[in-house]
Image (cartoon, rainbow, N blue to C red; front, side, top):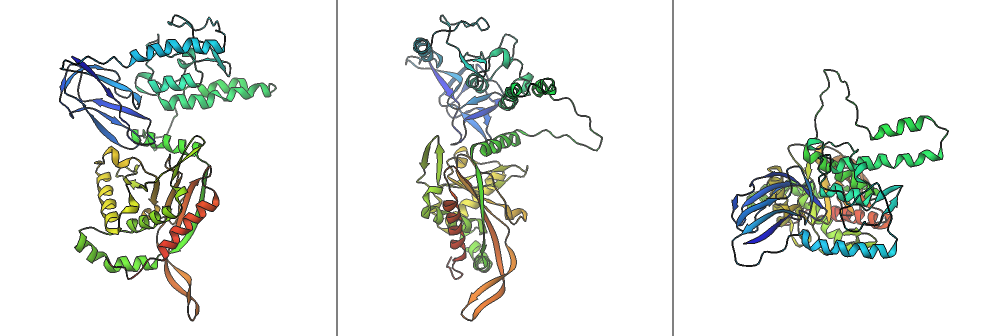
Length: 458
């Protein structure tokens, strides 16, 4: 009987972990190939994970609410067959760990530290980070009975947090479990005491600083106040937005464009367009068409950053921020947007928007975006400063279209006329997109919109 590891799947380019919502099958249950085993969630979408083979679930490695890195085995499925069972995922790692200890010891003499005991035959060397012993392995289940997810243990190891220190971190997860948000909040407060020696005369600091790590006291509120717990998606979106602002130095540029030709053309053809193609045409596919053309003119806006390397994307995959009935946002992606005509873009926009609101998007339909468009004009806003959707480097916001007096150049001279005007705003990552590139790209999008042919055939 062979054993097959069920791996946490990759749900998107920027998704490095997923939360287990619930197990549909339990240990001992028989499953068929492609039958759903569990449900998982990311900051983008909820999804079902199917079984890769037919067999019996032998072991479940993680529990509901656990945050699991992608590529990690989450269950073992026993299949009927004569082939030799593959070795468990943990076995190949053991020789590597044993080899790693002598290698690091050759660079640095072993340190004797009575505070930490390791079950390994040879103690691992200790590196000092801010005075805290680092490099020790945090067990999944501590002696106190507390469970630590692989992500939390990895962060603790990288930041030099010992098991004793981790035990003091307040947890907001199920049964007091420490979540990613908890340990990141702790790390922010943990760095503050380092400034105390610089100002020892301020006696108030030692008494106030430890309080930062303590759980927040209950707040007394009146009967006219309602406390609403964030849902899971809102928490994940919040983390993603904060991460984006920490990662990228945001700069936003603005232009105002005259879209009178577009408005008049759409009003003229929308009835015929729907009758001919069975689709309602909105302004969004027209905006996407202009964006795709401008990206081809300025390909360095269609990139991502990996350390000190710039990854130039040849595919133009435009994501569109879509509001859900819950008030949250999701970003389905139109793949190969530059290869689609206006009818194809319209069908893709309508289909993805409708299925997004019904929570019927597939995982691959929110992956691999290279640029994002958000329409703040839908809410009556004239402009916005959107946050970049990592790992992309730019996001375009289109505002509400409004009638305004504007100067129009004619063969008889300049005239003031009522025109349909709209603001475009581009937020971009100033690490790799300078003002010249960002401003030129934004202006090019505006030029394509203003040059729209009012006599265009459908």
